[in-house]
Length: 145
Image (tube, rainbow, N blue to C red; front, side, top):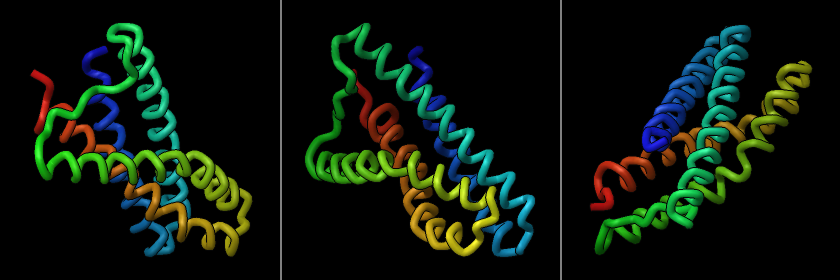
């Protein structure tokens, strides 16, 4: 269970790669490959969410708290909490936005898909990248003693 944060960060990193590959494929008008990358990114994100919830449950059952305390000091605290708050707020939108976006793409509602994808993609990408940064700040760069 102690490896869950690292696994979850790896899933976020993989999601980032898949999203960027999906963007590249759609720019090349390679729709089947674009679809495969976006569906894979969605599946990876769902697996991440399950691992994240499992980690929170395990953390609470062993420590009585759902959170790990950030150990950084000074300006790093402001950086971390700014990143964390923006990450959490936007992460709450990703399941809904990505589901709608994938549905519209799968049902070939092309114009509606494009319209929402212009909103979904940057949010989803930001959340996946900042998820990795939050992990590094919390567990690698400023770990608890």
